[in-house]
Length: 357
Image 1: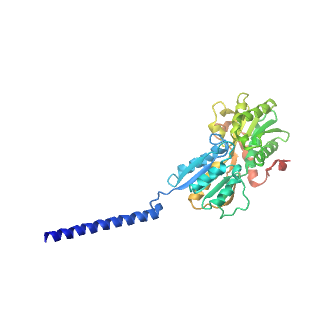
Image 2: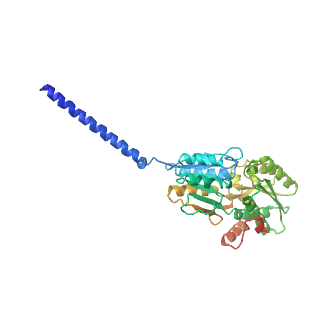
Image 3: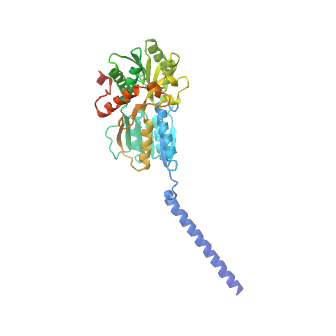
């Protein structure tokens, strides 16, 4: 009798243990089948810089600011990673593919040199979304997995050209561009047009560091060109040269020549010696473009195609802050009036040197 009770008890315990084990296994399987139920699954956002990388105090740093803000605002929704090409940027496509193979949801290519590689990679990874800054891919549609983020840089350049002309005493101002290309020539055209709007007789001296992507990371050549312009009588210098612009600013520091930065508000990261000489910067809000693209992904509103940022959209403009507010001074009224006339269409800003002529 006692042996029978023990057998029944043992059998009951065994059944209970098996039931608990099966219940646990079933619960684990359910969670694995839907890993997003606990809210921990994050979207993966990757960014590949262009030549000059972080620390250029310009284009790439502006992109990083947008990525950093998104990471801060959406910390519970995204994880981010950024990469920088080596040498002359020959591994840009390789880095795009690396992030795509790692199943990143959004991959951003910062700069026009990604124009050829992003469409190729996007075809091979249709589930990944891509953002291309400054590059144009024809034939894109809302259902495409690529969006081109474009800017009307010439509108912002027109404003800083006007600011330069208002400040110049010699009637001669300078422009140092990085790579001679339609994009940088568009900035030069806007700058020249803005200066001539204020003073039709003003002389604008323009030089370019080079004709390849290397031109955006050669501060020695940038300094050399700037010194030549200063010796020729230029008293305001605008650089649109990426990391090469560091050399332009170095050249302008000792003789105390007015400087104008590009892309980012460069007075914010300038040295105490240079900051009082930075009249303003032509802001190109790459940070906003990066941030808005990431937000669209999070909100499930990402659309392929094209998005353009100009004065009207707050995509470009001139920098004003606590350091340069007094330098702009009374010219602010004039500059803001010009800005409104560009937005309304009263002023047509040339988008190329050909249009300028």
